[in-house]
Image (cartoon, rainbow, N blue to C red):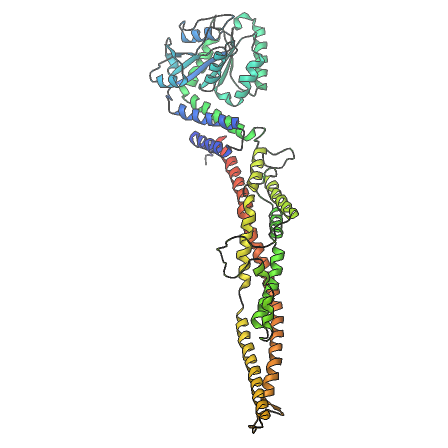
Length: 542
């Protein structure tokens, strides 16, 4: 029979690496406090893993008068801590060690200077029991010491008494934030010898209800009396189990990593959960926003003006190249539309200076800004607040480069529209041949008129039918030149339209590429960062 094994989650090392990556990706986007707390957890976890793993650090924490120092002495089997009733007597943490060889570096890291050997070792070998200052001490230094060590120890034993077990400060400041640390938390109701049995049960039930409300469902709750010894064996047995397991340190670190990753993902300003409308960030940019950006950039770059100039410029240069030589020189007095825009053949990729395309109007610039904003809004739709803001900022991050980049693209792309078709050269040669025939006919007729004027004998005159060849050459050259010029002009008009369409398509493609590089790619990079962040947080949370 095939045995189904439970799929294990990522290791602690993998989760720590993912947490570090999440903090790096979230830096500058998420609240500094959330990122700093996650970094602290990662650093603390790395330090704890390098120290003794054969020792389990258990801290007794509680309020003034809860009897935790008495419980500490009872567990240690020796009078190690001074006991007070109404005022705090523990100013700094102290440690009781059961077989404490090798625990020195660990206690140095915890900054616990007072260390005492405990009584009989028994099955508690490897236990390091800390007696913490009172968490409600009137001295700030005591409370700060508790806060520091609560974040560092492997197991937390919260000692409460029947009078103050429901203290709001305890539950709101300490127990509720430890909701993810159920596996390393124990709650002890001390001083039960002062209550009748029925009252003890009621207190335990009420305490359990409060803990369930704090998210600590399933946390062990023990009733003990440090004075009479009631329940101490149960507490020792529980501590012995945790010590023997030798895994409380990893359970604590795992809970810390899970909590830190959860704060990165679910902070009110950084939540990756669906927003109020139930939508989730898609990590994509709708095509409509991209098309709108391209259209706005094309209009602002003067593409319609350039396209019209391409058509007119093609016709202008065609007339100069293929027109009737008798009249084509007049065309040179008209400016070339593309040259007037400083778009000339041969500029290629090395564009120096700007074109003379009319600058974008205020309305056109506003349209571009709106299109950029639409790209950012479309891509940020459904993303958490800080990430949405980062995506919007990414869309605007290189907007200042758009004007020069688009102008350069217009110049380099449109320069190809000034290339001369090969047929222009052929027609030009033909026009000059026809013009040469016209000149030949004119010269021939001139010679004949001169000879007739001088009363010289006329040479034989060849004819084409009834018409003399000089006349054929003169009139035929004139008519052929004009017809060729008209045909060339019609072809140039059609060619100009085709070239204008090709140029418009090429310009749109090139400007769309500029929009992708300067607006869309930064947005995509930010969306990719968010995707990596969510993946890292998911891995870190286990």
